[in-house]
Each structure stands twice: as structure tokens, then as C-alpha cells.
Length: 221
Length: 326
Image (cartoon, rainbow over all chains, first blue to last red; front, top):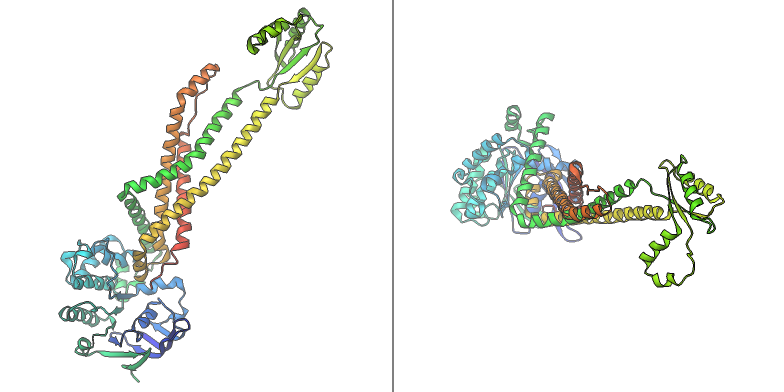
């Protein structure tokens, strides 16, 4: 589903953010990506999202080589990937419903379909009752769940999460991880960047560990 | 739609819109949504929107108003059906009776509508009255003014024909000098042409001004929604998707500006109508100020919309591509 082949990323003349990185994530897998801050976790996710392009090497997502993807193809590529951000990236002047509906509006769904899907996604994250609230009135954990609902509402086959439990207490973090496991069970490929080693080592999934832009464990031989 | 939704569940959202029909409807839906949303955003801040509308309206009303005034002036100048006259100054030895005879003779010509005699005595009396040199004139022992015939050529006589008529009259033995009073018509025509150029230049400058004002307004709107644009791009919004609401914002600013410009022009004309009518009556003319009319107002609104779109397009194409998720 996601395949990196000897991928390097260098910013300007500085050091390499990623060095000769090779790994593959198969369909239906849930994989954690860990490492110290600055180890290259975010860079890796940004390459998958096409927010950056690799300096060398090939990235393949959904069976497509991203190198051959021009800038006009980027929006459609991103619509196929659900992303959860550490800082939620919600629109604070719109209701919860409108936030979750955004990918569907972009996709051009008609409003009945939008309503149906948004409510299904909010139901899954347990926020159906808050659909008309403004995000600012929600707690951090609830805002993160709005972000997750938005990531899954378009039914992507890949779900990326960048430190999704970064600002949450352990109990809430466990709940959020449980949500990701549920999506993974229905066939979504999930890649979660997290430095919460205590939490992720309890969950028994493959863990990719990055150090200084290189992979130190987790890649199959 | 149901079919597309079904395939979406199997293959993910990327492939949800396969048919042209679905894509067209999605496109149309987003246009409707953007248009309504942009208008709502403007109406949510009525005061600042009103100020922008008025700025645009004033910039548009100025050249349009000048042009309307010019059109009115042109209709007045056209309505003078005898734009030129020929003044025949007779030799001083021609006395009143032969002069009167000559006037009658000239008036009977086909190419002359009227030949009016102003006798030297009448001319002197008029001059005395108008110039205020009464005492000076009294000291003269004889009237220095000649008899004068003012010839009004038929309206069909124009241009070169007018000059050949002048030459013909000049050649008459009684005539000392035949003066074609065309200079003031030429001056008026020249003045009108100059005014038209000035209106065009002012119009071009203010059009540019309107586009720049709108471009800047849209730039600020883009800046204030930067976070939203980043998020929309992150979840897969295309450039045209992001662009659309801003183009509509420009359109609404322009259309509103055109509407207010129409109102401003109409209000100024209404304000001027009474004195203009009074002035026209002094000249025994039935002249009435003509306004923009429905078509003119409509054109103004369309023009405003186009300017708005242009300004928004400039701003959007310059600033939107700079905003990328980092």
C-alpha cells in the first residue's frame, strides 16, 4: 500500500532528514512510526502526502509512483488519504458538522449523502450529539476525534496520523488508538507517527523506528 | 449518485465521481455553494462591505457620469440645426434699400433658408446698448458700421459646399466681406473631442484603480483565510476549488459597486435636472437631461462584475499559489 525505496530527503544544503529509507506497508496493516523528534517522522508523512518530494528514491502509494504525479494530480491523491494532525487543523469558524463535511464538499457529494456520511463518521467517534457545536467549545480529545471523523468521512483506504495523542492524557490517548484499530479492522491501512512508546508497545503492531533519518528497526528483511 | 456512492464504498473516495454528469453536478453544486457563501460573508460585515462598494461605485460613477454629461451636451449641440451662418458685410456705400432688396433676393435661393438684414442703424443701437461705449459713439459724426446680412444656409449645405457658397457670396459686388461663422462650431467639436478623450483617460485610470482596489481587498480576504486554505489543500481541495469563493467575492464586490455607481449617477442627474431644465427654458429649448436608462445601468452592473472578477483573478493567481501546507 505504501512503499519507500531508498528514499532520501535533504533540505537545502543541510543535513539529510531521511537517508536511504526502504520499507513497505501492506494493505490492512496498522504500523506505528516512532523516533525522537527530528528523526524524520513528519518528513516521511509529508512525502506520502506529497507536501514534499524526495531528493532521491521512489515513493509508491496505492500502487502509484508519486514521482509521476504532477502538481495537478496532488488534490486527488490527497483525497484518497485521510490525515489526522497533532494540532487538529480544524476550521474554528465552522461547526463540527461543517468541519467533518469538508472532504465531502470538496469531493462534490450532494447534501443528502454529505449529511448521511458525516453523521455516520461522527457516530463512530462518539460525537453525534455535538454536530452543531463549534470546535472551540470542545475538549482537546473531542477536537482530535473531530479531526479523525474528518479523516475517515471520505472512506480513504489509507489513514495517516501525526502524533494524534500528542496533547492528550493516557486514558484519552488509549481511546484514540482504539479508534484507529477499529478503522484498521474494517480494512483501512493505518500509519501512526507517535513518540508515546509506552502506549504503542502495548498494542502489538509493527513499529518502524527512525533515528537520524534512517530506519533502525521494523522493516521486514 | 447512488451508484457512484456505492462504488465509493468499495474503492474509496478518489473514484467516487466517474461520470461526466456527476462531475458536472458536483462542479455546479460547488459554484452555488461558493456564490452563496461569499455573498453571506459580505453581508455579515455590512459596514466594511458597504465602504468597499462605495469606493468602487465612486470610482465608476465619475467617468460614467462625465460620459452621460458629455452625451447630453452632444445631443444639445446636434439639436442646433443651423450650426453655421455666413455674415455678409456690405460695402458702406450700399444704402438700406438695395441691402433689403439683396436680402430678399438671397432668401429666395434654394440653398439659403433665411437672409436677415441688420441695418447699420440697428447694429449701432445694439452695439451702444451692449458695449457701454455710448458716449464715445455719440462723438462720432457718422455711423462706422456697414449694413449686414446674416445668411443661414439650408441644412443640406455642409462642408465644402458651405465654403463654395461663401465664395459665391464673397464674389457679389455689393459684398465687402463674407465671413463664415463656423469657427465656433469647429471649436465646440474640438472641445467635445477633447472632453471625450479626457473622459476616456479618466475612465481608464479609474478602471485600473477599481481593479487594484478589488485585487487588494481580495488579497486581504485571502490573507485572513490563510489557515482555512491550508486545511482545504491538505484534505485535497484543488486550486480551482480554493479559488472559487474568492472569485465570487470579487464578483459580488464588483456587482455591488456597479449597482451603487448606477444609483450615484442617477442621484446626481436628478440633482441637476431642475437647474438644467430651467437653463434650457432660458434658451427656449425643450432639452431634458437623459440618464443611464435601464440598459446603461445593467451595463454598469455587468462592467462592475467583470472588473471585480478581474481584480479577484489577479489577486488569486498571485497569492493563492503561495499558500501551501508546510
